[in-house]
Length: 114
Image (cartoon, rainbow, N blue to C red; front, top):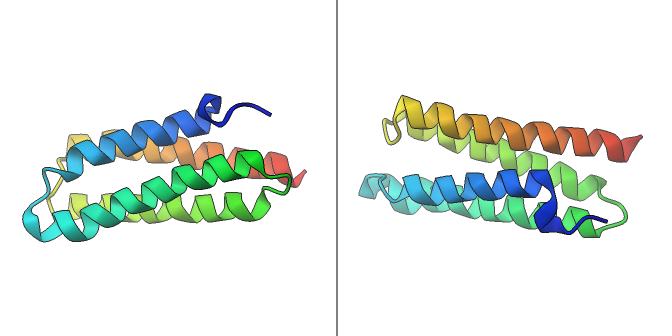
């Protein structure tokens, strides 16, 4: 079993978390303490689930929960873009990271099922 912090999906989600912490501090007050906090919380929970999945024998349920978390993160990032809290450039940049994590979780989930 790989150490969790060596997993590519863990590294990708950690990079995403750092990015989210950096850009949520620039949200207007109205969104910083609502969507901004939720976005950070969901991403922290995502990383926790990736760690847990790596330590479990039966990873299926944990990986499914992680996939749900990344979709919630994707939704919040899109919402913040639509509400003009992040620039289009930043949105594209963050969305690539979200997509990378999502693809890796899907691949991991498929490999566990087979």
